[in-house]
Amino acid sequence: MARTPFSPAFWRSPLRGPRFTSVLGVVLLGGITVLFVTGLVSYAAYNPDLSPVNDKTPDKGILGFYLFAWPTNPQWLYRLNQGVHVTLGITLVPVLLAKLWSVIPKLFTLPPARSLAHALERISLLLLVGGALFEFVTGVLNVQLDYIFPGSFYPLHFYGAWVFFAAFVAHVALKMPVALRNLRAMRAEKGREEDGVGATEERDELVSPRPAEPTVSRRGALGLVGGGSLLLFATSAGRSFDGPLRQTAVLTPHGGPEPGSGPGGFQINKTAAYVGIRPAETGDEAWRLTVAGRTGTVRLSRADLLELPLHSAALPIACVEGWSTSDQWWRGVRLRDLAALVGYDEPADVFVESLQRRGAFRRAALRDNQVADPRSLLALFVNGEELTPDHGHPARIIVPAAPGVLCTKWVAGLTFGDLP
Ligand SMILES: Nc1nc2c(c(=O)[nH]1)N[C@H]1C(S)=C(S)[C@@H](COP(=O)(O)O)O[C@H]1N2
Ligand SMILES: [Mo]
Image 1 (tube, protein in one colour):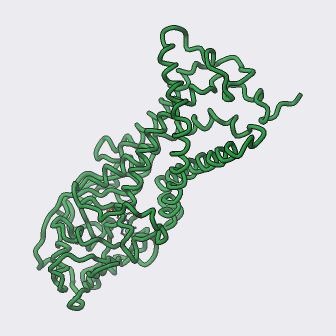
Image 2 (cartoon, protein in one colour):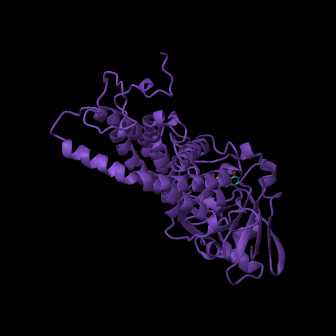
């Protein structure tokens, strides 16, 4: 008789069983919970309630219930959060794949539904598996190919996370007792016998009724998964650091060597040439900064800005894609001083526009608490020299603890006021 995947005997790996699945499940329980929390925090860091530009999910409704004005302290807050979110996500890929592999036979269980409860459980599993694949795939694509779907990554990854996490919570509630029982049984048996794959497992639909000869022990297989995770971690974590550590991040963009040497020789997301900024528009004769507010509009040349009080702040660039730089020394005009120029002595929000005409991230909005922080600058210098063209010459925004995406480069206009 030809066996099809719908026949339990088709699945012959002696590794499959509730124990192998339980170990991986418990790792994912911890890991995915951290991914969900750091993901929500990352979303809050974007200040998505700020219209007109930051709000990529205007219909979020109660899913935005936890949103708060993103703080400016500690200055490494976003750097840490996003480094953990992205590096952990990459590290968990082998665990997720092994977990899915371990339960594949369940996909083919017949009949499709034995009862209403069983049907509901299977539908929730569809959301669980589909949601997990969707979140990991969109996340990894975003990290690796910087915004294959610009603009739409936010809503996709955000709504996907809620669907996935709802199914995840239901799944954990259903499976937790079984998983813990399996882990306890494994611990109790340790030392009493060899790592007999499947040998002492209770009857379970995951256990093959016709197991093939083992080629690797359960412990060996878990070691392989863990080794894969370790390898991914070791080749991606470094891009949250400078110097030799960054060079270890061979797997991900913005790892490897710095893009140059000297004061501007730290990571660049998009170069001036890439986004179409021409040197002619940024020169001293052509470039003017437009600052608008309560008392009208002023236009400032770079020379005018240099007449204003200049201040320094040591702040990192931390990208939503997970890479970051250590603190760089920025020097420029405080955003709150520019607000005061146009009639805002009290805190005000600001809408920032770049010279850039096409592509994402040429506009951003900042909350009044970000404008008020004395370290929030319209930077003209970095590490003691004029900004390089690729870091946003003649002027860029830098704000403590804010995601890099809000630190607009090649700034052309600032509009202070109350943004909705
Ligand atoms: N005008 C403009 N500003 C921009 C961007 C951009 O594409 N255009 N990219 C943003 C993103 S996503 C990041 S992470 C930082 C990177 O700054 P850096 O290239 O100086 O490291 O710039 C931000 N500012
Ligand atoms: Mo970024």
